[in-house]
Length: 224
Image 1 (tube, rainbow, N blue to C red):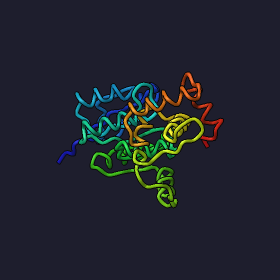
Image 2: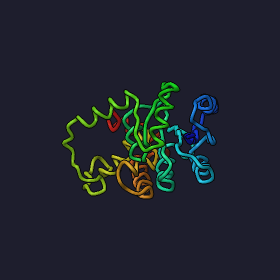
Image 3: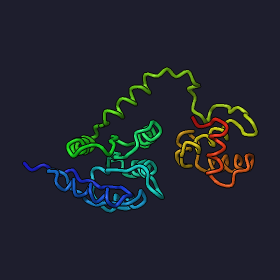
Image 4: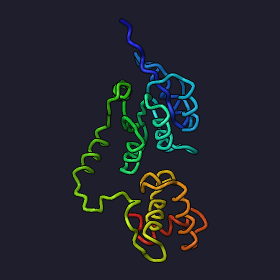
């Protein structure tokens, strides 16, 4: 009996990397590349018009990034798996991707055999992580957490300096490089609410743009 190939959509904003992945996967038996995209928005368009099993997704991309695209894709096409392939293995990137619904997380030093195995696992609903990502997840789970367990939206923010606790959190997350959508996900609040907090915070600290907020975050110890 013939086995249906795993149909893959490759998403990466770097053309050399994207074309390299397409060429690499073209050499793998049982894998069929059905398209490629340079950003999350284009990936969503292709998923809507192309039959695919797994989206091989980069994270840091202009416009709609991989985390946002993963969240929207999983909501609109729950039968399509997302396997992250990125340069970044920091805790924020990993947790953001997994909360968005990714089925696995690989870094770009993964070899062909590892990518092949992860694609096949994702296609049948299994989860795959590189050893470094697995180590970080184990450490995070093993670390005692004495913080308030309630969702951030349910906690009463403290007033610190001229900013409320929530505004302080938002400025700190801007300092860590998070987008408005990622901040909304992290704090369990709407993106419109994030924008309101940003506008209020910027007015209080005299920030004209995000770079000013980043400097404020570092100057006041909101970024470690």
